Length: 176
Image 1 (tube, one colour):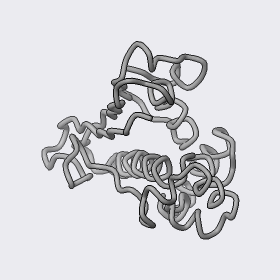
Image 2 (cartoon, one colour; image 1 turned 30 degrees about the vertical axis):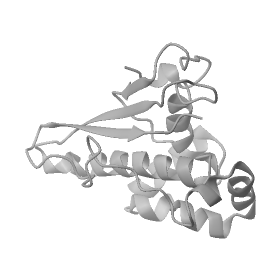
Image 3 (cartoon, rainbow, N blue to C red; image 1 turned 90 degrees about the horizontal axis):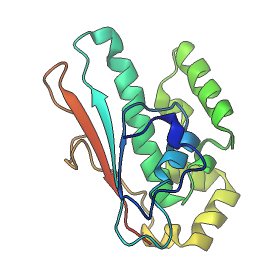
């Protein structure tokens, strides 16, 4: 289980292949850094990355869970389609991403308006498209951004219907 302590400097891919996020940063770069502790070249076992989310009983907090869910979806989509989540927002800084997301949400914008989809990033950023082509992620995805599985690898990313029930967001990644 990890929090922000796994963002940098700890390489765990030789010791483990399962990662459980119990808190989620509001930055695609920081999410990718955490996942990268176990998702490395040369690992022998494909990583299992799980995020624990709560389905709040108070509707005032349901928007927060939706934002966190969309961030996890978009990081996974960027990882599969672009090979790098940093190019999705084009800010290349965890602090700048968090500030942009915080300011946009405070202004009433939707998370999908702030953080583009991988296909949009490929179309708008020639460097992201070049990187995806060079790393083979553009060809491997067959022209469509990979869609992450929902909670517990189900097709529905919205989580359980019961308020207060935990939601596990699981992403399996192929080992390289």
